[in-house]
Each structure stands twice: as structure tokens, then as C-alpha cells.
Length: 331
Image (cartoon, rainbow, N blue to C red; front, top):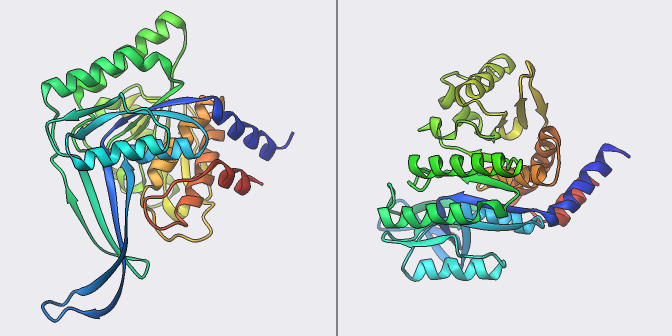
């Protein structure tokens, strides 16, 4: 059986997996329009709005990718008790995802609004209240993890630095994962899409997926070439004792350092054209988790994630990849 046939078979097994995503839930709002003149009031374009769109964003975009790729997924995070929170719940219902892990907290739903004209983003403005959640909200999230973690085949932590991925939550997550491993002998992979701050929270992760810029910040090494890339990956692996480091590098593809290997596995980019990298990290984390849950080796899962990322950067906006698109690319 060829490598391509093996990979296609693993994608078919995505349907048998169930993934939990934990992190910062965002509602992405896109305002699409055209520009034909500059404002007489200020040197800014006047956008004639033609349509608006609401999409699952942040950690919810990871969920959207998992479901689009054929897997089942649940989300643990915070939304506001507000109209935009209701819009997000409606989008969750539309993709068939359960919402029992979404806690209505005391702060408003995080919204990122992007104005796009002639295929170019004109401006983005954010409405958010970051920081640690209230005690009651955090307690509800911790209880959800304790009650439901055993139901999943892999866990993704999607950190957008809004405060959901905090010390207490990660401590509980590691504890429950350890208890499940000791009681049933089942090791649930933990995939982390990090932000550079507070890296110590992710000690013991199965794989961490920083981009090139984040890897430089985390390791303190300016990545300029293959040698400094390897040094940065090794520094991250040693610092958090993870099994693997997957650095996403845009047009340069990906680099994987696994286990005690003293060499990088480099995966060239599959992108034909790059229009928009928004959400590409979400697609990588989603595909990597599905691959590991479906029985892929780390390298096989990274190759699948690279193919999926190559598709999503060719789309404008917070995009996802479908199972059929991924299978077609592998063909």
C-alpha cells in the first residue's frame, strides 16, 4: 500500500474520533464591501457594505475544522450572556456541536470584526474583556473537564491569550489526564496551540505547535536557518518536556522534532497560493489532533496537517477544510 493510500485511509478514520477543544472562544464578524473613493473627512477608504457574516472563531474555529474534516468535537470555554453569545450558540447548533462545555460568564462574548474590500482587509477591531474568569465560571469549566474528559480521543488547548487557558485550568487538565492514564491505561494526546507567555503551563504536552515567530519568542533564539530552527525546537522540547514540537513556517512549510531525535523532519508547504493565513494555526491543530486520534504516527499527522494548511491559506477569511478537500489534495 502506498503512503498516499495509507494517509487517505487515516483521513477516513477521522469519523471515528471525538476531540475536545479547550480555549478562548471568539465570534468572527466579517463585513464585506467595495471601495471606490476616499473619504473627504479623513484619508481613509469609504467601504460600501455588501454583506456581513458571522463565523466561529478562536478555539471555536478549531472545532469547526474538526467537524468539517469529519470528526466529532466538543468545546470548553466562555461566552457572554448576550446577543452575540446567542449567535455563537446558534452557529454551534448549525454545525451539530454540543454546547454543554460553553459557560456563560460575566464578561461579554469576544468579537473580532474585520472589514474586507476588494479582497483586502481594510481594518480589524476587537471587542473583548480578557483576563482570568470569575471563580464561579472557572469552577464550572473545571467540573466539565472532570466529568467529560474520558469521553474524548484527543484534547486540544487553543490559547488566544484571553485568560481561559490559566494555571488552575491546566493543572486540573493535567491531573485528570494523568488519572485516566493510570486507571485505564489510555493515554489521551494533548495538542497545544500556544501563545509565548506562560509556557510552563504546557509541560508534559504530547505536541506543541508554535509558528515561526512564536517559536523564536518562546526559545529566545532568532530563527534564521536550519541550524537555529533545530536549536529553537530542541530548546522548546527540553523546556516543557513535550513529546514533539511542530513549528509552522508559512511558505517554508513545517518542521517536526519528535522524541529524542537529533534531527528535524521538514515538511515542504503544500500551498499553491497564499491569500490569507487567518486561522491556519487552528487548521493545523485540528488536523494534527484528528490524525493522532485516528492512529497516525506523529510524522503522518504532521503531513496531513500540512496538506490541510495548504488548502486553508488559499481561502479568504476564517476558513476551514473539508474531508473531501483533504482527500482530493492527497489524491
